Image (cartoon, rainbow, N blue to C red; front, side, top):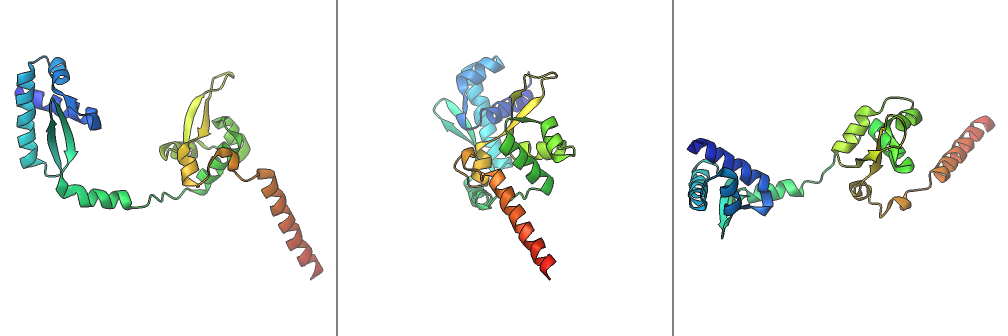
Length: 189
């Protein structure tokens, strides 16, 4: 393996190890070189990153190396973390999410039946936003995927538990009563 390939492999290993960091012994074993050579290559990568990657740096903690963001990048990272995540949900996604929340676990076919239209895109959007998850397979022919809400769903809507969802039948009755009052007033005029 060339030196360039070794550096590339080390970068990949550091990335995959993330917060855990890369232990020199493990890297040496994976790369098939000595621990001394591995440490030498990691130190070379550390120097190279300092010159060529100002937003990242390689830190050494005993026999572990960890890729971290630079102090200069910290204010920008903090700003990004402070930005409230407001990914507005489309009407289709909201409808689909309500169906999943009130009927979970539920299959895509059941969602489609309730909505009366295909919900594949809406379900995928909700999965991407981590509001619903694939909760396994139904024990029915074809073994379709079943979906349910996540803790992220509870956080997003500020609900302590799924049992705290408003009673669906109560809401429908209130809306029906309001509509009846409105139409009665129109009839009187």
